[in-house]
Structure formats: C-alpha cells, structure tokens
Image 1 (cartoon, one colour):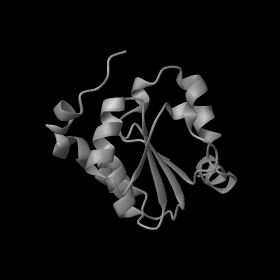
Image 2: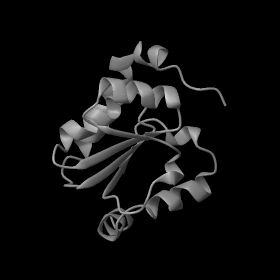
Image 3: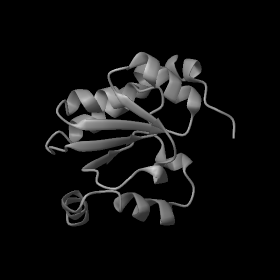
Image 4: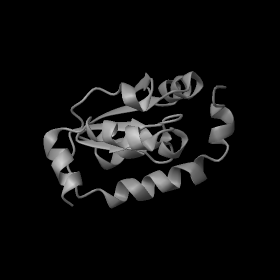
Amino acid sequence: MSDWDSALYLRFKKERTQPAIDLANRIRIYRPNKIADIGCGPGNSTEVVKSVFPNASVLGIDHSQSMINKARAEHPYLTFQLGEAEDLPCGYDLIFSNACLQWIPDHVRLLPALMGKLNRAAFLRCRYR
C-alpha cells in the first residue's frame, strides 16, 4: 500500500476539516476524558477534537507515516501515533473518525473491535442510546 501525500491532502484542508468540525460539534454534549481520532491524517481533525474537548487527552492515530510526520510537525502540542485502528489500547471514552472507517476492510470484525476499545460507561452509552 502506498503512503498518503499529506501536501496533496492539505490542498483541500478547509473542505476536509469542515466535516470534522460539524461532527465534533454534534457531540459536544459528551464530556470525554480520553479520545482517539482514528485516521487523523495530518492532524487537522485531531486539532478540531482537542478544541471541542480542551480538557480531554486526545490521541491521533493513522497508518500513514507521511500523515503522522505532518501532524507532528503542524501540531507539536498534540499526541500522534503511527498504527492501525485495531492497535488502540482499551479505555477510551470516545473514538472519533471523520473519514477513515470506509477505507478499513472487514467492518463485521472492525466495529465490534473498536467498541471493545471503549471504557464500560462509554460503551453502555453507545449501546443503549
């Protein structure tokens, strides 16, 4: 698999960031302490999540080294990790993803695995909403 081009991705930064803003604003009612941003790309969505939840610990994760390098350079005050969605440890209050899950195969396996990464209270909120 070839790596993503962060410079090309950011040529459309405004268009790519607006859906993350819209999504994050829709979930403002929650008060998560620990958040993962799956498919964080060059960090623009992670920055949005951190701005909406300034007191939360936020991790951006992406499988593209180019994207992680750009995210770290552009947002040195945020935490980024190279890896796959499945690499997340457990214990998150919120797993955020703006536009990445459609690129990960095997949703029958992936979605329950991601639900298993949520802490119990967050899992129950998702399950019984």
